[in-house]
Amino acid sequence: MKTLTVRTKARSLAGYDSYINLANHLISTNRKSHPTPPAPKKVMDYPVQFLTAMAHELRNPLTNINLSVGMIESVTKNDDLKVYLDIIMRSSIRINDLITELLNYQQEENMPAAQYSVHQLLDEVLETAGDRITLKHIEVIKHYAIQDCKIKMNRLRMKIALTNIIINAIEAMTSGKGILKLTTKSVYGKYFIQIEDNGCGISKENMKNIFKPYFTNKQGGLGIGLSTTYEILESDHVEIDVKSKEGEGTRFSLLFDKNYQYGVFE
Ligand SMILES: Nc1ncnc2c1ncn2[C@@H]1O[C@H](COP(=O)(O)OP(=O)(O)OP(=O)(O)O)[C@@H](O)[C@H]1O
Ligand SMILES: [Mg+2]
Figure 1 (cartoon, rainbow, N blue to C red):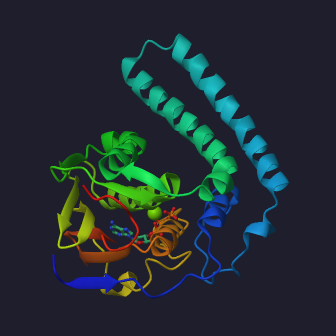
Figure 2: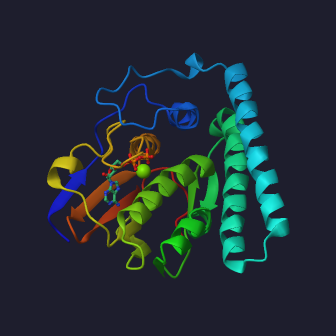
């Protein structure tokens, strides 16, 4: 898998804030891709009252979903159906948690970075994506370094960054044939996280655009995931390296330089 390499250290997505991207995810009712990105909005364009009202509105239909699922669950004897009802229930709990996280986001974003285990964080992301992994019958292989590593980070932001990469990997793979490989290693003053899939891969043409806001080639995609990831990793001085080959798969490597203020590596 050596054909394409994109190093993404220098460019800045000025004006794009992960907080706004999250808000966009929640408030966007238009699931089509945007040919020309609209002007970036500033955090202050979304007053806290608006987000609070939006969160409240989102919780109403969510409550209806939960109540309806509960009703169906209480009358059905079909075990297969119950598996899917559980997934709906867990997903709606997850949406509810995300709404809460969104409301606490500004507060948590301003919190000082703290030491956090990389392996624990990766496991949390896998748990978040667990239902999609199960539904697509994806095999997960963990090649974690023997010693865990604690990195100074804002946990919530880093979790969003990693989740976007892993969800894309899941979406790129064929059901029943997917292998998702997570590797951590410490080499010559750098700590690596690698996320590898054996999915459809990324064409040379698309590779130029994957970190641009609103770039998507998926039906119903927003094209926001990787631009958010980029913004978070760049602001945390994490280098991203992407290698991909069409029809074979894609590997995202994140490089934490030990000389930067990430803290303890062993
Ligand atoms: N692992 C991958 N394999 C193949 N293509 C990928 C992979 N990761 C990203 N891409 C490509 O990069 C594009 C941009 O990804 P991004 O996450 O920003 O948006 P999206 O997944 O299309 O939509 P969303 O904002 O809902 O996540 C994708 O549409 C896809 O074409
Ligand atoms: Mg995505």
